Length: 254
Image 1: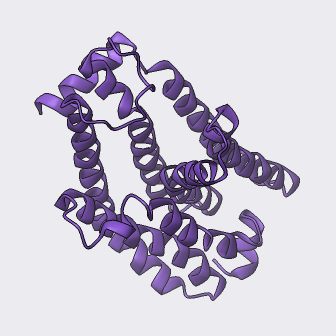
Image 2: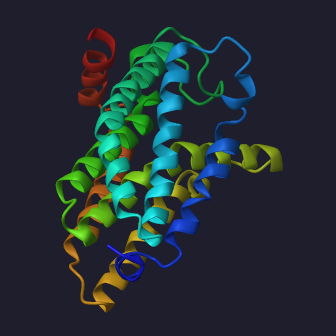
Image 3: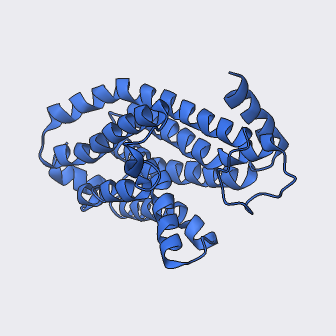
């Protein structure tokens, strides 16, 4: 894959745009993580954060390596991810499980009036981990698809871009929340769905590019379908008895 081919199957500015994930991640997690590194945060936070930072830098480096025609290094980093990604998935599970137990213990994990006062703790806990569970599943699915289609340039690039952009959710939503708090704005439906909409817009744009250049459309259509399903689950799972029971089994008893 050379520079012209990379630009042909993605956005010409993709590699540079992915650099924005660095400040978004830093400022998004600054109040809750980076500003507290000298404190006594649980070890699971540091383990997961370290692995996610490695994944972030790998995701940013890969398109630059392609642009520079450093294919051998691109493939080497890709193989390293075969070891890193299972560790990220495992640590992500323990982060979600830790969050579930925080809410289950009655810890104030959300603003005081966020939940009804009589809502049982196990329902609160299940609701609290919905968004992180959706992004966790997205990352697994997109990465597995990206690896499975590594010999198909369009599919590989599309699925790996989707996997990289899962970083945007946890970091971007937090950053938007911090900005809203600083400006005294409500964190309303527009703010809450901004990242969902942005990612959808990216892949709708990519779909248009693929169609214009007569490239296969199935990978981008698949990402949009998986993205849409995740959003549907995000709005369907909270307070649903099936999700509440599943979360209790998966995050509380294993």
